[in-house]
Image (cartoon, rainbow, N blue to C red; front, side, top):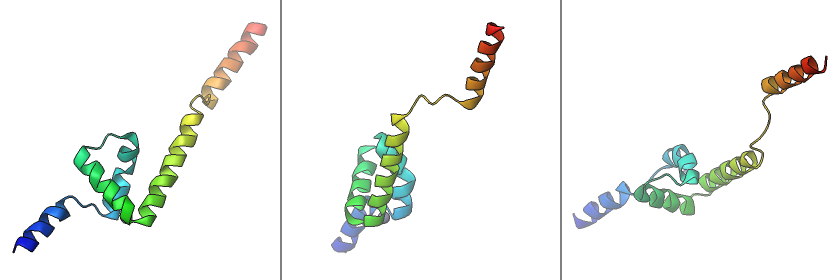
Length: 88
Ligand SMILES: [Zn+2]
C-alpha cells in the first residue's frame, strides 16, 4: 500500500519521451517550471535518445542565433532597387 502510494508520487514527477521532446525548446529557453525542469532533467539522464534530441536542438538553436542578421531576400531586393533608382 505504502509502496503503491510512493510509486504514484514518484510517477507524477516523471515524463515520457514524447513529453520531453515536446518540452525541449522550453527546456532550452529555461522557461519550464522547476518541477517540470527536474522531471525533464531526470528523464534526460536516463534516456540517451532524448539527450541526443535535445543536444541536436541546442546546437541548431546555437547555430541560428549565431547568424541573427540574415537579410531577408525581399528587403534586400528592395534596398537594391532603391539604390538603382537613386543612382539614375
Ligand atoms: Zn526519452
